[in-house]
Amino acid sequence: MRSTQQLSITLPIELTNAVKARVASGTYASESEVIREGLRALMERDRAVESWLREEVAAAYDALRADPARGIASDSVRVRLDAEHKLKSG
Image 1: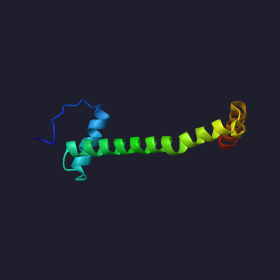
Image 2: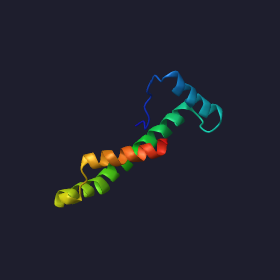
Image 3: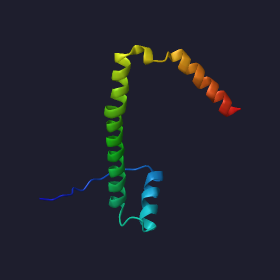
């Protein structure tokens, strides 16, 4: 049984050039290798986001539900963000 399957894809010129440049530089042996590595990175990022959601966001949500006084009003957040933005933009 085959462990690979051929797939035809269409990429924008900019991405095509990026793939070809990586092969031309010798970093990767083939275009397929570049795409595989990109997909692995995407899958790893997805796993990291899922883990963050399960472990940190869900815990923060549960803590807020248990003690609503921990929350900050959206107006307060907006005022603080506006003030920080004004400081940075000078």
